[in-house]
Length: 221
Image (tube, rainbow, N blue to C red; front, side, top):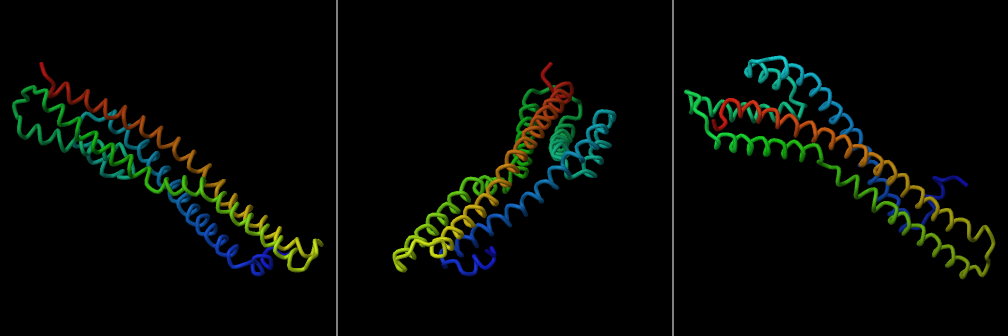
């Protein structure tokens, strides 16, 4: 049996199901490739930015490095902190300590971190949906193919392989395509989620380090 001939000879319902599963599969692979590149770029950019941050004692120099590595979530967090600290320095030229300054900085860091997390998690929900829904869509195609096989048996009053095989084959094709769409989506979703959690931990540690620096400059005596 030729799989393409099976698809062309399949019922319109099964063909629609296969098209839906093909859409899920193609869009999922597009997301997988995009997220893999973006998360890898974020990790590499952070690896380049962190040494500059740790070695340099000039915040303006670190700010230039952050702008040079926009893919890093740490850069976005630092730029938000640097903007707030510049505002504090401008409005507090004598360096008077004020606990409210740390609260403002903490809110700025939290807002920047949440924005970066939302950016990294964008479109992951589609992978989760594909992984959970595609097998059931394929199962529906399987049920429909089996129903079609029984209808043919009733119409021809024959249970021969020639009568039953096309409907069963359609059912198996729908199941296979559903799994083909679901398995990569589930694997990619779990992999990306693990990487994002590592980046979130790195972002939290970096935010605490920035708050520690700000506390020495603007914290309460």
